[in-house]
Image (cartoon, rainbow, N blue to C red; front, side):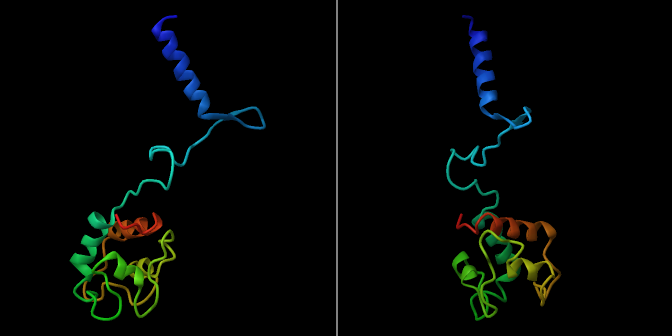
Amino acid sequence: MKPTTILCILFLASLLAACDVSPDGGIQTVIDPNAGNGGGGPPQATVLYSMDIQPIFNQVCINCHGGAGGLGVENRDALLAGGNSGQVVIPGNGDGSLLVRILDGRAQPQMPEDSGPLLDAQIDAIKTWIDEGAQDN
């Protein structure tokens, strides 16, 4: 058998392995939620706390929330501990987390208080980090 024939057979076999026949006889693609991350465990994070989130807090928030009462943002543990308003981060639920709602203005007082609001991209990064489990990465 020619090498190109073998490659074609392998390609078709892998293509068929990613498909399933629906009840109406059609073919549908089966998406593996763990594809690309070694086949197990949670999906790879797209936002890293140490590189994407903590720098935002260091630049904008830490002057008022640096551990002097209320909410601390000096590190992930302080943030997850919450503050005077209770828990502000619900890992896996960015939209429901008080932190995101205060940053985007859905809850008051909108933060940061002494400057303009964060950029939408910064708020989106924080929300995504929380949605991805608020990992210490």
